[in-house]
Length: 219
Image 1 (cartoon, rainbow, N blue to C red):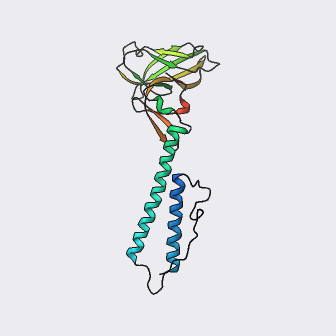
Image 2: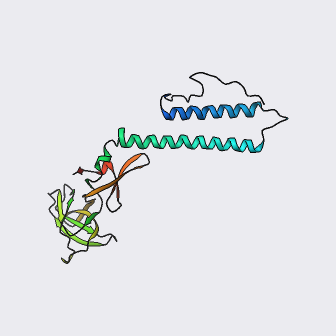
Image 3: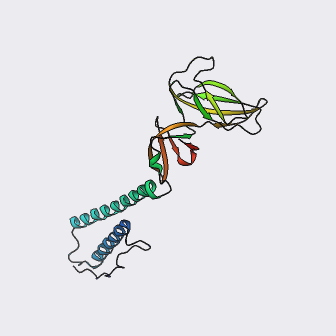
């Protein structure tokens, strides 16, 4: 079986636009060279002695392995970029700190401070508190001129609520007309940084996730 000669030198098998110094470019070049050799082999094989099926299957398996290696390298490069030199640079330093975001608070008996955004036209506002089962446990009046509210852990009738996760919503009213509802933001500890669809997101205590651009403060 004859194999047609392929181009030699630095330009041989190089993917267009690839950086020859990067690991990804090296893998892409090897992949392109593999495809060139396989195509040439199929084109120039002896019709009287075709490639054995076992050999062909083995080469297809090699083809799949090279392809998976390239994909793995690309994903690793994105993770390294996000955690070191990309848009999410420095996020690893946030692990163990607290960020303020529109997530549930882990109530442990101490009052919870909630950042709120009343409607500019609001005459009154209510802080609505929900438990982990999405049940409303409290509706607390809030001064619409303030940007923060505090929940002391009591329910509608003043009874103390059990420890656990609670979420907050601010309802703005003009008279009896509801102008709108906005989520309250609370501080929660960061336990992990992950990548989701190429975007960095924070994993908070309790397992909730929040995108980085939803964070309004770090402490």
